[in-house]
Image 1 (tube, each protein chain N blue to C red):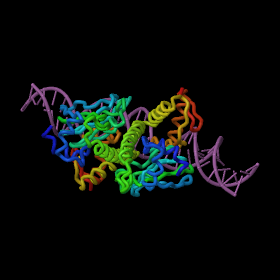
Image 2: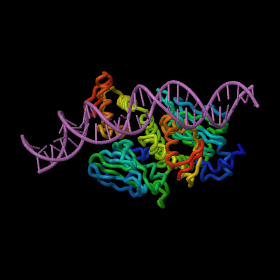
Image 3: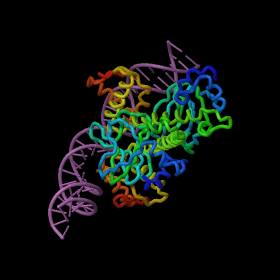
Image 4: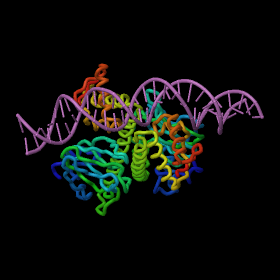
Length: 219
Length: 219
DNA sequence: CTCTTTTTGTTGAAAATTCAACATACATTC
DNA sequence: GAATGTATGTTGAATTTTCAACAAAAAGAG
């Protein structure tokens, strides 16, 4: 646990909590660390949500597969971020998404009821953590809106351009790397992969962008 | 203010707070009530979010219009519900959506910083309200996921059926009324209106549903 | 009640997406 | 380094969606 202290100090769930208290809190919360190899599932669609996840190392992908086999990728989880906090806070009985490790990852799991309900020891951090969760949930809501703005575009080209412009803005540069391969990008944008490839080629021919694999350069 | 007490007692923001304290709190929060005629805008896309809204009467619609003029309807706000709480909690400088009254409505506005930061009077309800906000934000996240599950379907027919099945589940009956006219339903599902009308006719001819305006009956 | 406006359904043509199949490039494994 | 498997780009055909235009029905205004 000790080796993650530096990272946990900067985790949104523990914002405003002094390092000195952290280890004690983690114990009080019953936090445990689990290891996942690449491609292993952390949480499965359809199962109850009990745990707030904190990604200690590696990276995860959130996705959903519908009745017809279409996969939607909701996004990736990066180091230090929380995941599935909304489902855990709402105690959902059937998670609407799955979370899968896209590389070897270490995850901290905290039973959400331990955060929400004051423990016998009455450690005074619950209020702070609930406040932190509230801020985090509001942020996540915004991220969700951002993706919705992209996927609500009607055509493949508009979706792609909206997404790339967002990436450029986030990177603060016209050159950036997207965290998805072609199939994943198609599933994030909710379009056909081959159509997406064709559209990227077209944009390249039109001189609107250059690209090499996951690297893009907007002109 | 008095006349709304009954409704406010059941508002998610004030859950677990005794009626006796409510009036005093509202004063402390600087809550004010505003009146909006049909079609008037409560919050505009692109403006800063400062206020948590509580719908006292009437109904509102949340929507967004993109660069090409395509409108996306995110959903309606019903009596007693909070709205724009996520944007206010995250202090966004440019709201990604607009909120418009679809009938004559009364709205209570609470400056979010008054909820988040303890006041001089140190009234002890901030913790409870922050907890309530956290629960509400988690719930809203789920609602958002529900809509995303519908709009992520690839075809008009699948989107429509996914939405109608959701409505039927919510209504607990195969007969129900949707809160949208055809154009609004198309903008909620993010499809073409005429294509949607055509699809409804087709489903009717196939004996899958009956419908009259906003009333539907799944067979 | 009448006139005007809005809503809804219908149609056909144009445009875009999806799907399947394949070739090439790239990465991984043994 | 050869062989296998995966990722990407390309193509054409089938399907869908979008768009524009219009007619009928319904709602709202005066």
